Picture 1 (tube, rainbow, N blue to C red):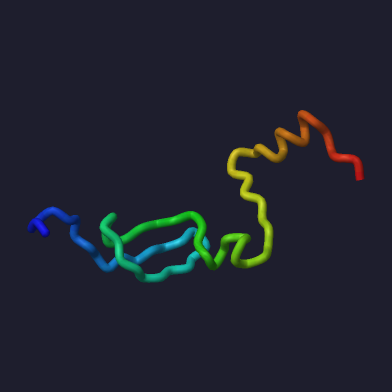
Picture 2: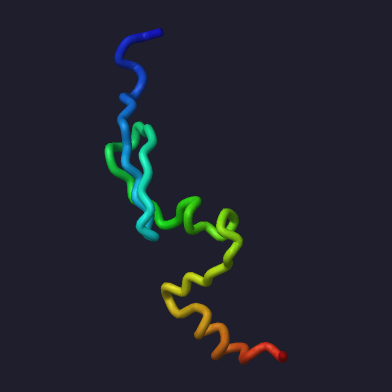
Length: 69
């Protein structure tokens, strides 16, 4: 293998928006921030939550009305 060809691998601390932190290895850097991890993702937790950062749900309800119940 050629020398100085591959990127360097660092021990990396990954921080999630939910507050969870864990360590891994990455070439991206020493610290990475993510929005969703296995501690808060609905697939792993079994709970669904809506992330409405731009008021999209309210705009949809205003435009199309409430669903018949």
